[in-house]
Image 1 (cartoon, helix red, strand yellow):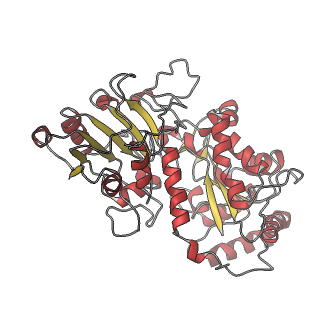
Image 2 (cartoon, rainbow, N blue to C red):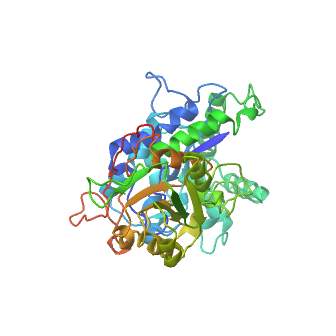
Image 3 (cartoon, one colour):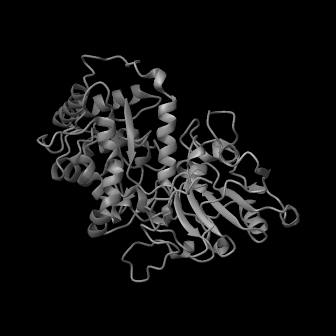
Amino acid sequence: MFLHLVLRDPRWGRCYESYSEDPKIVQDMTEIIPGLQGQIPSSYPKGVPFVGGMESVAACAKHYIGDGGTTEGINENNTVIDNKGLLSIHLPGYVSSIRKGVATVMISYSSLNGVKMHANYEMVTNFLKKNLRFKGFVISDWEGIDRITSPPHANYTYSIEASVNAGLDMIMLPYNYTEFIDGLTYLVKNNFVPMSRIDDAVKRILLVKFTMGLFENPLADERFVKQLGCEAHRELARDAVRKSLVLLKNGKSADAPLLPLPKKASNILVAGSHADNLGYQCGGWTIKWMGFSGNNLTTGTTILTAIKNTVDPTSKVVYNENPDAEFVKSGGFSYAIVVVGEHPYAETKGDNLNLTIPEPGPSTITNVCGTVKCVVVVVSGRPVVIQPYVASMEALVAAWLPGSEGQGVADVLFGDFGFTGKLSFTWFKTVDQLPMHVGDPHYDPLFPLGFGLTTQPAKAQ
């Protein structure tokens, strides 16, 4: 079993800033590797994959390299960058991953300075394998070698030769694998791909398999099947939600905070397209590749349900997905919680040069926050345009994609736990500012890298 560590900026579409701008963020990101593979011994040789026993799984660092810096942030596009920028922005996560014994590295669909990464000998063989001394195996992305040519698969024999000679050890072939086998066999027999390259690939793949114990235990271990989705796992996910929430604004002034919200209130308005939608909370790459809308495909708690679970039994919660201003004005609400954000996406579907919250999100914010005290909770996989609305709201929370455990959002909104999260990348004012990195001469963000207000847990209400 392989689980993936994605070392790229998740904001497809106008996405540039890397996690590696802050060493602590790199460390936090790569801590998932010992969590998956086990804690690597201090004496373990550098670059050698480590998987510590049957209760561990092999991790995959992806997508190597420069995937988060493509022109205009477009998926599978070209990253134009000098060596200094490449090494300082995009590389540190991989260095840390290799140091922690990551078993595999996946190559990016994107290009680096015009060279397709799936055919980039300099970066795969010379740099990753020789310079960084990575001993695990290098794997292609889904039909990644097909995309070396334009249109894809236009010259498949060339794509096989270019990718294997570049240093790719395992090729992800979802469909016609016999075409690849026949093509590679022909290339080896006719000396276009040296046998030494095949030996290197086989050695690396076998090393990972031996490390994982797959020859002793080749079949899936079903001991933990019943733990999937168990209460302990959901509680861990809920705790992750609490800790990942970032409080960006709290009150019109520092001495008049809105959060934590009182649990006891006569009338509470909950609004927004994302308040009662598990699919929107989960985003893409979950139950379905591109995500989904609604509450029927997975088990969990929506933010609306979590709010109802948390407030005092005497408090009335009124839900209106997109109320008009008159409804809000006449409702006599003590305060409002507005939950809006992006629709689910994955990969190219997420390309977005505007990064705006889709309607009716902005209208809901305007109608509600212009009339009653409100906290806006943004559900998104990346920073989005929010500056035009910040002045009208009392409080603003970045909830990212809380997944199935919306209760974690309510836990912190109502003060059972305090806000502790910090931004792992800059939140821009307008997309015209992008690309924007810490240290730029004109660095002028809405909220800077590492920003996040904190609160203390509320006393019993």
